[in-house]
Image (cartoon, rainbow, N blue to C red; front, side):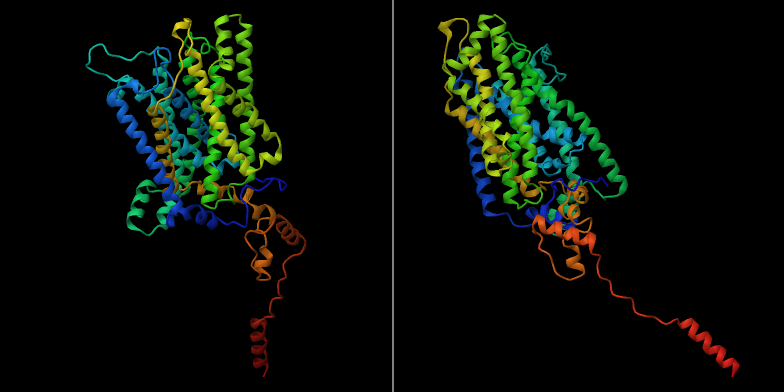
Length: 518
């Protein structure tokens, strides 16, 4: 077992046992759904239906229902596509990269983050399909053998690269997420009593038995998938950035886009993880497993990636001036002072200035402040994609072609609809799947659990429970745990003297000798 320093704050609080972990994580699945869940899924369902209605109207009427014009041919559709892809990046980073680095704090958030990744990529893939105008021929983007004559995909197009990047990302993410769920599905299978639920979880668990060989294969496959997924963290959003970087349009034609987009994706992804996990933490009473230490670690990542994004903004401005290309210089000047100045400065405020407040430990460990900031960061990241796409093309080389983009109700409806579908999928996941990995949390209980760290392997209040029969409260304070630990070390438990038992063998031998003498 890996020994962790006693001065480190435990990752699992309270006097938790292995059974407690199972009970706490599975309780939302076994118990009846609260009213709040039904309210949220109803609202999400309404938004989703509104979005579906807008998509049907769009496909029946045409792309002209969007606010696009001859100058601005890409707007909310590609903005939302890049935004959703970016949100999905944190799940892969937490699952793959932090697994390879053996970061134990990832255990509490990786399952929910992976689910967020899969659902976000599904929402992202919807926008390029709609943008084609003919949803029913969407499969043409794949290089499939066909008899349509000379129809074949253009491998030089970054849009085709997107297809490969997103499909690979989704496939690996789905397999990674599902393999981690298999042991937990088996745990639920063995606990549920309803026949339908038992059958469903039996199928999902693939006959998992929990044998040593199965666990060995499980860990090997997890490491292999982590190795495969790690390059995807950097490649997927780099390829998405090529949609712009490989063009010759001022404001897009820049080599800084790949690392800049990757940092921004991790930045927005961690913010969305915080938004969702802080809600789940409160709703499912998982405060012992996700607390200020996890939030602080995530905020440190947000500070780092937010600072990288800020440096990228400043570098763009500097290079636009240093290059001496007047068109490039005007593109960036127009962002800050042109008609879309409000979007540019909203982006700068949300993405660069706001995250710097996390340098203060009091704010960095405040759950309320973190929740508000996570929403602000994602608003800022949406503005970033909007600024990059729209402000670079709304004014071209001919002033007579300059225009201004106004979103229509269909633009807004499709975007809100994807948020509704995402909400429905995530709520169903939280209701029927364990939101935290039960098996993985158990692996860190002895090294990072509060009871084992402060009770020297016996658990806080161990001697009170077993020697004095005084049941210690599970939510006891840090000081009481330390006192119990000190008592454990210095005062050994009182053990009663064993009863005196006569040696019956010797007694019987003496009796026989006496009889013989007589």
